[in-house]
Length: 214
Image (tube, rainbow, N blue to C red; front, side):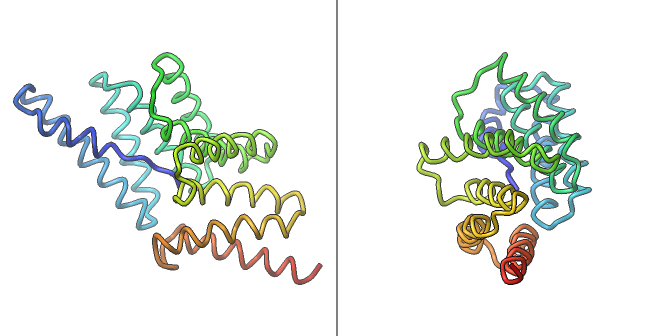
């Protein structure tokens, strides 16, 4: 799961309310509420609510001509949810929209680019496009290494993706290594009951069973 919040931007805008009219203030408050609602729903595993809130947020941002880079960020967050509910083609559509926005409006935020590539890797993985998926995950990991963010949930998610590719190709030992690296990170951030950690642990146990019967 890869999402990247707008919290810092909303805080910046909130501290500059004196420069905004009432309508703008209202839009910012609604966007902040939708962003928080989406994040909470996603963390609780309520992906239907997360998808709805993220779509509403993107729509509202587009209505007020919000910063293209921030719309792209939220499209990537939406794609993260779509991947979780097994809608990879829809996720790919949203990610391609995000890439088009960033092509026209380049961002210096390298973490945003890493997350977007990781989400695209997951969408491609779920569609069985393994070589392209691996490329996207490796781009994500390269950026994260440059940012000294190898021990984050972003990196863990990329390693899970590469591990899943290895498993599909029959390379179970390599897959287990990637999963073990990722699980250490996830467990440092949450307990085993977290929806993502729980899912990853289930996949890891299935890989272990496959390894035992070889």
